Length: 116
Image (cartoon, rainbow, N blue to C red):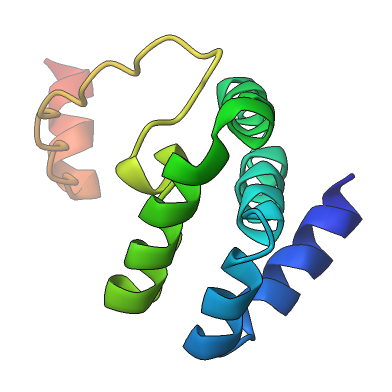
């Protein structure tokens, strides 16, 4: 699946704006495959599900949105571009400031401390 997603994304992003706009006229199938591939490459299960649902039920509304976005911004908008990331990990704690490391003592000071 990842091989298909990588090759499709490379192919689609290599197309010119005009070609993508013309492909958008094909009931938006290439743009929907782009969404699906982008989410599959990031292992984003929500994105995969939404991409399939939009491919089935998106209809002409999604076609118009994609055509406008391609012509104006040269991108297909998708939730993976919004910064949403599905993760299984708990949020990482912020690093606290560490105490400065002790300065190295010369050997004479260490011996004096041992003798005392």
